Amino acid sequence: MSAPQIRVPGWMEDLEPGELERATELLREVTSEGATVVIAAHVGPDGDALGAALALHLALSRLGAHTLPTVGEQPLKVPAPLAVLPGVKDLVEAPSLPPADEVALLITVDAASPQRLGSIADYLATGVPTLVLDHHASSTDFGDVRLIAPRAAATVQIVETVLDRLGVALSVDVATCLYAGLVTDTGRFGHANTDASAMELGARLIDAGVDHAELTRRLYDTRSLGEIRLLGRALDRAAFVTDVALIHTHLTHEELARSGSGLEATEALIDLLRSADIAEVALVLKPDPLGDWRASLRSRGAVDVGALAAHFGGGGHALAAGFSADGDPDELVEQVASLLREG
Ligand SMILES: [Mn+2]
Image (tube, rainbow, N blue to C red; front, side, top):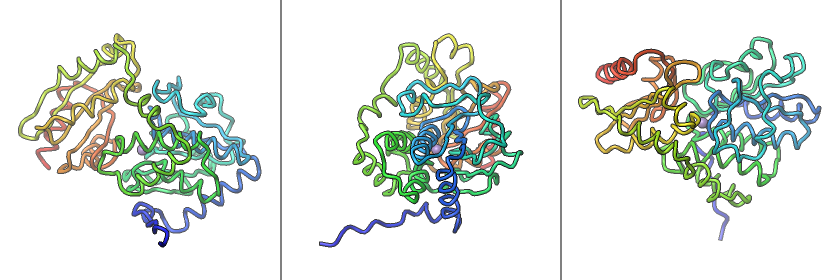
């Protein structure tokens, strides 16, 4: 019997020709020279951003680079479920990072724009060579070498491809970080972005020794009583705009603070809300650390919420997107509803 043929995943065709070679070359250089590499996840990091940054940190430091994984926000808050990720204790607070002239390479992961990098964006103006790894269709043109694959389910898929090119064997720790990104961005392999290549990577990571059941339990099934009550409050407030099939709710800064939970406690909310059988689009307004609201949008398929979020200066994917905004929550909901009416 012949060996099964592994197809080249469609998302790999999204990459600009030559960029993968350029990225590999850059990484070979910094690892052989033991150079300093800053690896930045986006602000308000999720499993994909932190998983990608920490996987790169663990693998590249092993190859000899001096890697500094970071998030451009102060204080640097790791969502509680992600605190179990290998390498998380190595995260460097942005003010402790070296000046630009001591940094050989900046790698950004899962960040669609310089704004998503917070204070790390300061490096961009200084001419530090920058490698951008991302899967957002809304990615703005920044950085020198860009591996952008909108059809990839998660940035960790691009990271794994790069590590494979470098000849890195997957350690349990690196595989665990990659798996965290994969399982969160695919909604536990349930979202429409889950294709054979995502499943296949999941299989290889489990083969590499990831304790996937324990990791998934940590990521999804562990909540404080305060978090559960917070979710209850938001669900109780859920309202429906009939003509555009929009279900929405919000949580205030005060409510979040009173619950004693971090912002990550609100992550489950959008998935609960979008499960409403009557809804085409779901909207959650959560407290934004930098302003009034951070909006999460989900579509059942007929509406491109990425385009909708772009109206507010945000972005994301067709079925999952977000934006930041200030103002009255009812007015924001009305703005979203009228954009949906315009189609
Ligand atoms: Mn992602």
